[in-house]
Image (cartoon, rainbow over all chains, first blue to last red; front, side, top):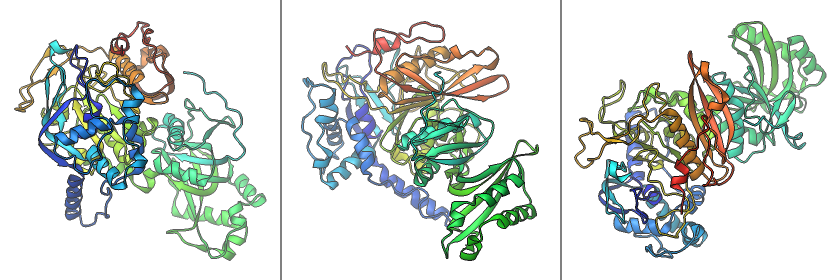
Length: 166
Length: 463
């Protein structure tokens, strides 16, 4: 599970009102750009005729960043990266995540995010890498209200609910 | 469906091009072309009965040759790079039902790029048959006949180069299933489609994948869905019935930078724990196919019930008054309609013996999820999660004999854009394309084919 997915999910256990963001813990993480690099190297070794990069390495892209930025809650991303020990190089969020935030959609989704233009290119690239490439292989998501734990196994979170939870 | 509104004649800046489509899915050609133009921000109209129509989503004709109106050649090239059904786009100079007529046209009104052919440039002439194989001798004869009518500038100033010519003229003969010659077209090739230049369908053949399921989508149709959904870099495309991920794989492969999210209720399919399907490599799962082509950084898969998904709702964070914008730009789906894969819903606890992941104890499968409810829930989900203008693209399966247009789900906030049929012997499936027109009113439930209100939107509405 990438941190993008963590940013977009909330607890859906019946009766839960404060289900966002989900608590994140991990016992194994990896960077998917490194995985891709390895896969391409293997492919090249296997097939010497392969044109160099039918699929190139993933690259930072300003358009992708501009499109995804309003969908992401940066304070939540920063908090999740910190929980995994990978917040280094990330600019600090304008607002910390707290349960008492009384703000509207625009404020939380985009206005409270740092303005992309105000960030350095290096900062944007770091955010991009954390958002799209940092993958939780083994770990868990925890509902902040009910404490229900959802396991993440082999990069796929199991968000199936029990009969009494729906 | 609203009838294709005849737009006022296009602005005079638009130029007329001839598009040669693949003949695999004629009903899908015009809607796909318009969708690709839309996502690329290109003004576009399709010629219907001699008139340019900007909204010709329901237009279908038996011939794979369609005229379109575009701003310029760069626009044509951009669309050819994205469309899966385009084979080539040409600037037409002449077309007729017989060679004599065609040659007269070329003689009387020679192609502009032949008259002013620049010195030192190279050219090639191609002769193609549609639904007819043409012998080399025949092709050569036709090239000679055209050559006799060409302005002399071409041969005086230009050189022939068959490998990488600066200009390619095409002569295309159209036949209908081995009948007599229907029409012959002559024009300059402006662009070739990505299926021709990149061998896209061969590269994404299902049998090249390590992980396969019984209902994996044909790659050509999956690419079509990606385009109908207006997928774009940085946009989020969601598949609530992801299965082995064949739809999302095509989206991610066609559109670099798009973010794809998939959910499924069946852990055996997603995790690859069930009985392996013939052709699947052991130890693989739905993520393997993405990893193998270097696209693991574009996808997330989540196990959940499509009707009880954990996605953050627009306007909902859980923080009592905090509201968030939506994030789903498009939804694509091949819902389980019970022909090859049964629909399931969360009602009882069930733990298949094959699911022996130690850390992953919960496996619950829903049973008896009627198809009409699957479709209704899907449309409701889309009305709630999509932004205005966002698209829902899905397959609707019906028994051909009993189908009526009322069987297509409707929703007051969702407009039906296109309905493209693919017929099988006793059943038909439609590719349904819907576009959100406004935020849903939570007090008014949507209506299904049966006319009953759908409860889902109301129960999920933010307070």
